[in-house]
Structure formats: C-alpha cells, structure tokens
Length: 168
Length: 151
Image (tube, rainbow over all chains, first blue to last red):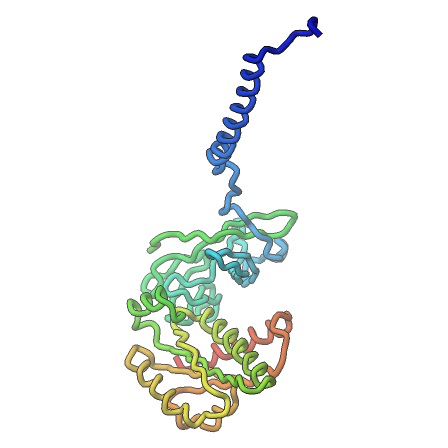
C-alpha cells in the first residue's frame, strides 16, 4: 500500500476541479462554437432545384408550359405551391425557363396567342419577345424573370426565378 | 387580387387596370347534418374555383369577399347582394361577376345587378384526387375564357 504512489488531498482536489471546470467550459463553449459556424452549415436555400418531370429531349425551340409543385414555408404556414414556367431551347442550344408571371400586375402570360413568336398577357395586352424582354409601349416595365436551371440525368431541374430588373 | 392589405394597396394604386370583380356566392345550412356536409363541400369547391380564376388573371380580376347565405332563403338576399354590388360599383369595377355552384340563383338572375356565373359543379367528390383537380382546372380555364369575352 505504501509503495503505491498516493494521491494527496491537494492533488485529488486539483484533478477533480480541473475535470469539473473543463466540463463546464466545454458545456459553455460548445453552443458558442456551434452558433459561430452555423451559417457555414446552413444548406443554401437558393440553390435548391427541383425536378419538373420534363426530359431535356422533349424541350424544343417552341416554348412549352410546364407546371410543377414546390413546398413553401411562409412563417407557420407550410404549403404546396404550384409553379409554372415557359421552357424552350434557344438557337444556341441553350435551355431557357421563363416565369409566366407578367411583370405588370401578375397575370399569366400565353405564348403566341396574339402575335406569333411573342408572349402575350391577356389582362392588359402586355407583350414580350421570345427571350422574355418586354416590348416598349405595352404595360409591363420589366422582362419576365428567368428560372435557375440545371440538367441531371437528362431531366430538367428548376429553382428560383430571378427578376431581370427594370428592363426597357 | 385577394381581399388582403397588400393586394388592396396595390389595387388602389393601379385601379385603372383592375376592372373585374368576382364575388363568390356560397350557401350554407347548419341545421341538418346532410345539408351541413353538402354545403360545406360547396364552400370548398367554390374556393378552389375562385382562387384558380384569381391566380390566372390576378392583374385584372379582384376576388371580393365571400357572400354567405342560408340555403333556403334566397329572396331576402337579393336586396342585400345588390347593395354589395352597388358599393363595389363606386370603385373601378366595370365587370362584376357572381360565382356560384348553387343553381337557385339562375332563376333570380334578372333581379341581381351583376353577371351570374353558375357552374354545375360536383355533388360529391374527392378534392384530392388528380382527376377532380384536372376537371376543376379545365372548368376554371373555361370560366376565365368567358370572363375574357366581356373585356
């Protein structure tokens, strides 16, 4: 018994105090560190793209209307929101997805109903060219917003629509 | 546009563009179980229809407040409804539509001072099923086409 190294009262208290103090410090620091790096761990909300159930091979030079649903959270209220887009392929083989919401007062625009190769808003006669730019002299004051898009496994994914500012 | 602050503020600013009003006429009858169920279904159906119409042409159509009335007593409602229409006419609305799935309004159509849109609707249906949804969507599209014809 006497050969064994004995732990003195002072040492014992030192050890226990360091241990308990360490736990307390860790308990206080852990949430702080978590909060500090939290923005890095957030998934990028804007980058969320959703499959719209359209194969890229089906996209032609002619704009087609597609509808899909996304989950949206408004405060406490969670809902499924219906989204639509006009999708077509440009002459340079690029895919364009335009929002169908008229930038004037929010009606839904149609393709080629009034003038050929133009988007037309039936509410107040707003007109847009094929690339979604508003035609001067008609009510809208900005081009149609463009959706973020990507292609994965041959399917089209769409994300957020981006406004293109004041336009003409 | 809907009857909420943000939309009404936008309406007041852009009045000259919004000339169409839709008022949903919705019956209810809470005294009998069976009627209670069918009328509540009509409430849901009317809401789906009118929201779909509003969503498509929200830049020109204002969706007014729901007009609820007891299923049996239509005659008493006409004067009150006309009063609503009269007040709305003081705003920029030139085309006022009354949307309903209740066929009884068809008979008194000439007494109300607005265009009646009566849609046969459905007696009972599962509103979640895709068939019903596409049916309603198709009908809503035809109604908006009819409204467009007035513009």
